[in-house]
Length: 76
Image 1 (cartoon, rainbow, N blue to C red):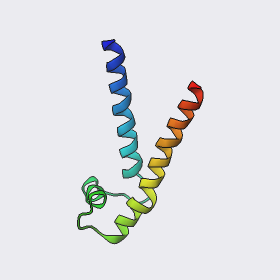
Image 2: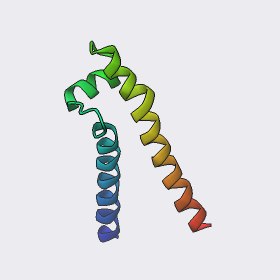
Image 3: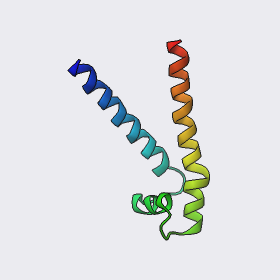
């Protein structure tokens, strides 16, 4: 049981890291602090906010949900 929990936690951490990497990396380099400000509503450049909230966050969320749906379909 303990080994399964450790594997689940590792996979969860890898998923979170991949989600963060998907938001941080792209054609326009964005510093993590500015991305954090854009996600929390802090003062940041409006173009940067549009890149994060309008393009990268929806793309990362849809990739996460599609991956989960594919895993669920495989399970069924």
